[in-house]
Length: 177
Image (cartoon, rainbow, N blue to C red; front, side, top):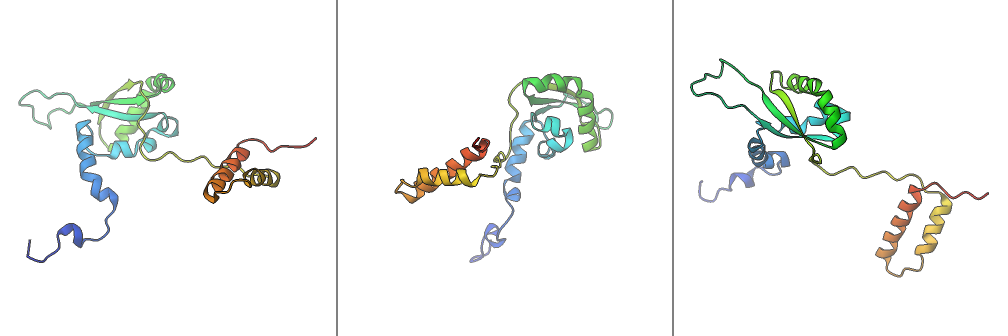
């Protein structure tokens, strides 16, 4: 490095987070048998919405090659271990051939030859989506405001009002007969 020059990481400016953590994540994936993050990141797209929520790929185990075997001579597909809920394990066992076919179509060659299910909660990446609140009636809004009016601290009062709106939005509005 030339004297007085900035290091490379300071010269580039802002970089996408994926570029920064891609290397360490790929190293972790290789320990689990995955060559890249493709299968993990595209899992819901590959298996569809039915299995995308209740399953996740856990490990890819490649068969050992005999000594002296040239790679072009014979390619044996890997065994994919899939984490899934108990109810999904039975469905997955029945539709394993279709899932294997989808995975292999995604990669363009025969990567997976067999699925092995592991009944553990699927690994989730990213934050779960927050539930959307329904509309709050004007009557419920007034009731929430009146209940929180006696609170002196402004921050606490705002938090109680948000909680009251969430409770009111989660139940049907009160109707007078």
